[in-house]
Length: 132
Image 1 (cartoon, rainbow, N blue to C red):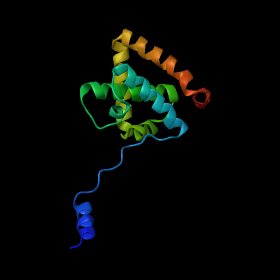
Image 2: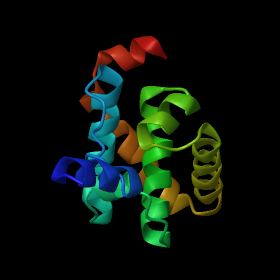
Image 3: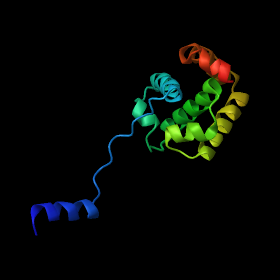
Image 4: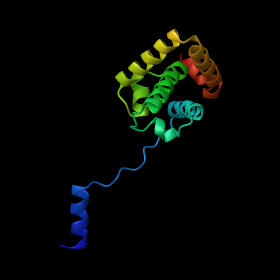
């Protein structure tokens, strides 16, 4: 067997690692990227962690908050937000429900989230106000 044949066989048995997941460079992707950046700063996580497959409580809650903010600020559909985060639309729906329930129970949390929504809207631009 030649080296090329061995390498080809190796790539079939153990596929090469995929390239890092890049966030879309569309206007919607850019807007959601800004939201992810803001949430990442607040919760002291890297941006890549929020869109990763990590499921620990801190990361999952931060991701849910980012999904909620994407919905509230950009008015994007659940499937679009899910695709951006690499998740199913039902995951985004669940995240939205979780954050809304916590906001009902904890008024201080609701105030902070509403402040965050108001701070993020100008960063996203006037397009999203018209689209709503």
